[in-house]
Image (cartoon, rainbow, N blue to C red; front, side):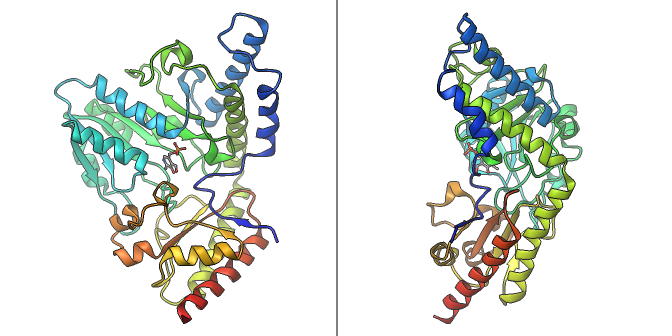
Length: 382
Ligand code: PLP
């Protein structure tokens, strides 16, 4: 029987359209986009087309799209740029306790370098402490970086008014929107941000390529210097095949995010699994379910069992899921995001994440319910 993949917040399967669009750029169409011959110009045209596809996804101008190797690089670039260009008097950075490690460790590094770091708490449903956030955005603040859709719980941050507060205070705002494409509409105008990061592999594109949106007019200093690629914002010969794949994935994600029927079906499947597990497993609880969430993600405390054991058993029975962030999968520490939401260590290490994609079927959700319930009951009886 085919395995059931419910770990789409870690990475997604590249869409067939993406793989098909990439193939020629890894075979005969291999020219460097900076080369002055027709083959090079064709590569440059392909990159231009992908930039347009990403601009449509984000509702921005193509010139505001900078291709990178992925969100980790985009995030590091946004931090480095903001730190390098901030006036002497501005030494405060703001992040939240709900950030992915890609943001968290850039913030921690800045703090080690002498920056003043404010870390905003979240409540037990994963919602930002907006009062504290807005009060910290003042004339000493250079940079604010906040997650849009949490990778562990799916909880959406309420960023209403944050961009305006940053602008009035003279700070810049970066949004980590990695988990959003294809699951909700994305519009940099509504988000009112200066920077935004994405990774193609989170929305059915290839791994190793991403986007940094840089608002037009934003003071910017590149992290990687060398060649003049990406309008002097990111040096290095472009990975044309990956960028082409990213463009197609962006187009597919844009279409999906406008298709309210398919978003509602994904949400229904997520809720069906969640409610069945909550009803069948006494002591279980859904983390962040009291907040608005992206429709793909369910994070469940299964009532007193180590998530690692449950994952091992359901993995043997054909279901691939995970416990929190893939980037922390090798760590035995409980999820800092769940701990910040007030869960204790046992609750945080006993929580599992199921993350669906647009391709998840009702039959897979049914089968997953059977497998998880049987696994938890068997482990509890030991
Ligand atoms: N931000 C969030 C919310 C993520 O989920 C991830 C990856 O899991 C990243 C940033 C980093 O993305 P990448 O590993 O593709 O650089």
